Amino acid sequence: MFQVARAILEKGEYTGTIRGYERYGLFFSQPIGFRLDPSGSRIPLFYGEVKIDANDRYHPIPRTRPSEG
Image (tube, rainbow, N blue to C red; front, side):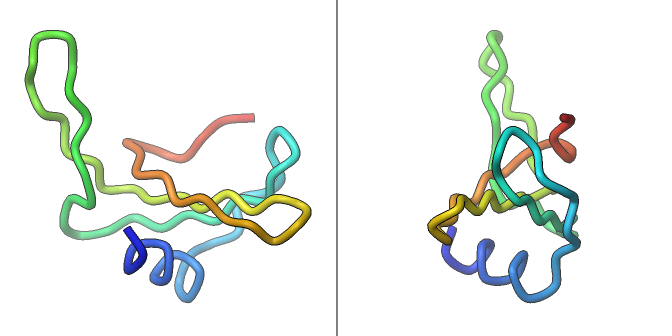
């Protein structure tokens, strides 16, 4: 996940401040993770987002799409 966060911070696009966090995102050509649906199927995640708080702490999140405010 460190490599995903690094790529987002280096190449990602600022997507705005949502719910008090600055957010940056990037679409990847390969899945960066998977989400399990209730039936047990794996949904590939190609979008990565990094949330940054007021203390410059960050949290990478694999997602299906950018978050909405």
